[in-house]
Image 1 (cartoon, rainbow over the protein chains, first blue to last red):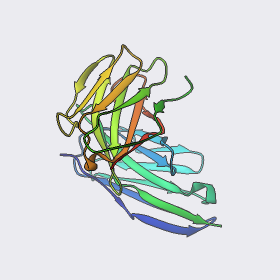
Image 2 (cartoon, rainbow over the protein chains, first blue to last red; image 1 turned 90 degrees about the horizontal axis):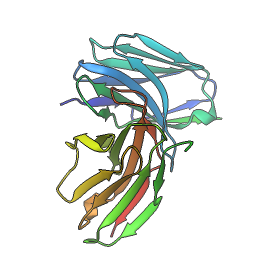
Image 3 (cartoon, chains in turn purple, brown; image 1 turned 180 degrees about the horizontal axis):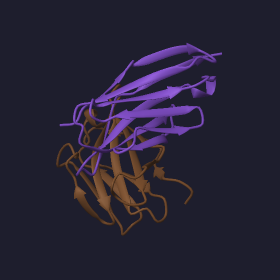
Image 4 (cartoon, helix red, strand yellow; image 1 turned 90 degrees about the vertical axis):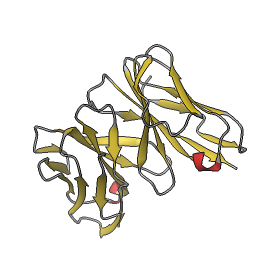
Length: 112
Length: 114
């Protein structure tokens, strides 16, 4: 059974700092890995999707990497802003599966 | 529509009552997913629809849970004889097709069973 772990559970940084969120998964047979953000009282917003054949994806200040063989992904956020404060979720779509398996998330607070 | 919508946004019910949650996916999206997020827990997969068939129901926690989908549109998740442990946020997502494409999530229904 696929398990996804995110470290740290919570992170507080001053505005302008660069930061890295970590995600690990136990079964490397994945179709893709997705990063989402979740704001209180709202649904999830997709940030980046990395196919299993890719090593990284970039969108603006966000960069996600994938090392499938070691079961790891990182989300790098450059020049953090207070508006980045949210919970960030990592999820993997298993090969031959129909479902995303989520980690419990990292709650990020960016202090002005 | 512009995004995935869910109703009601909040539901408070008494233990033992039945509840019905609704999801309207993005128009044209053939795949629809239900997830549950209990307090302090990660999202748990419940069921996946491709069109109006459900190839994967493996996440439904008990036979009190059921779901239907009409064609490639509205889906309803029904919980019979609700229990306090059913209290959670129920999230619906849709994607253009199956195969791991980006899933677009609705705002969720917050269910509280007293």
